[in-house]
Image (cartoon, rainbow, N blue to C red; front, side):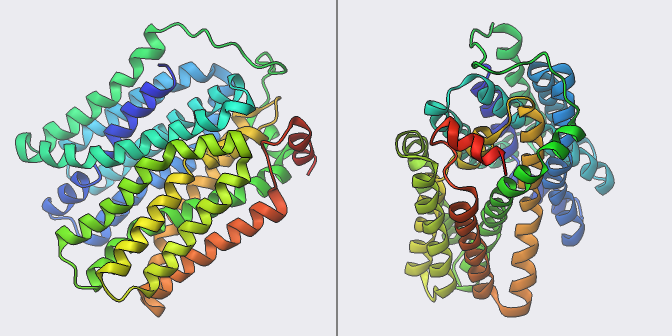
Length: 390
């Protein structure tokens, strides 16, 4: 309850605004460029908030950071409906991004310190799966609420729903013991932890950055290619839904494969499928190929649920797991900014098909790095220690 309820509540509050906030911004008379800056502030806040979150967790603990993060997330979401000033809206989304990242990071650190490696893949895949479930139902709920009660009330409801995530950590006593070797009495500063483990952080954090770059980029390019093929708005929505449905159905498989056969056994095929789907999308000249591409990408993304969280947890050093994961989150969330920019730059210069190929190439680089440099992280304690010696 203290792990998954806050995540589900926060993700629902976040995904409800996927169709709502862009409409709110444009209906208030904001230009497309200014609206895009406000929307991008969420990812920027998540990236900038990673290291400060790690520092706060080392000082105050995961539970305090979780409760404060949910409160900030809920308030910054509810406040959106009371202003149309771009600067204030961007600041609120920046705060929401940092708070949402802190929520996720606190739960990832909690699992890292208490869940054995043999079942950690399944624990982490449920975090990824909760976002997929929220992304499937949240936008529909948000869109319906706007029609029923308007923007201001919808933002307030999203904030209130997020706030319910505070109840389990406040009311439910935690009985999960720490794993052997985990010492919470040591308090290592965030900068010292990052400097000490900088090489491992760079090696391991490169893959999540590339993967998130592709994941964010595909959310931009799939609708755009659908539009260039002459599909209606309804058909474009259906194209996205096909991928989301496949994604949703397969997320439990990822954790099972990671725990049963190893991390690479889940990640390499999953990322390979996403890359293949992007190649098909770049070649698509009609609806059938576009739908097939969306389905392939969705299957691959579903099979990769929780993989990046699991890598970080496997490699997190016992003396500073929260600080290390904060560094990983900073690198990972930078991909949320890079992905849309890459699609825009390549698409403007060479066309959307080339942008899809560029995203596939990024993922092939991630796969090669994963196999040749990172290796299997969940194999054994010996393998983990070998990675820490990098």
